[in-house]
Length: 211
Image (cartoon, rainbow, N blue to C red):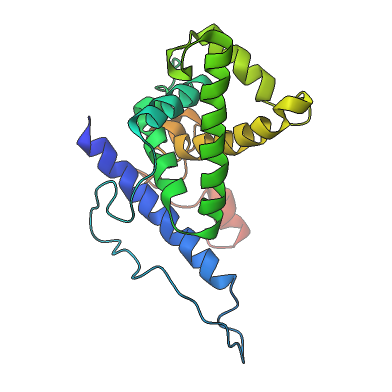
């Protein structure tokens, strides 16, 4: 396990969770005049200047078997290519585990969807192919995913699993594209320091009558 990479991901997760907690607090209208609503709260906010290990904020959710299933599904959605590693190599399953373990309302909704979906995925895999999802061939994994990849087009018996797939896909994409490798894959160039700055272009200075 690459501990340096894990700590980098933890920094990103800390900021994400802090932002989510802030949004949740604002949505309570606790700053409104005359409000009598009280909040139970979740304890102290994390100290964002510290470095944390997995599970330091709250108990995590996935069993080793669920983590394998999640890793396999993440890699179906985001396999390796010439530009970036596969999702599991970038610790996207750890991100999803951290997300659904958070004690906030939105994350707890996702937790129910994800856990129910993983149970369905394992049951369906064993029903069709006599093996768990992580042990299926790529073609077998793809066949199951093709049945649940679109809620609108899914057969009636696959409508609910398709809802799980949509939630899971959103979480996997969020985890992947907030890593340095995912941002590079997007060719995102923001927040990059300029090595050399020669000042404003001449035409801008001329327009402002500063040349």
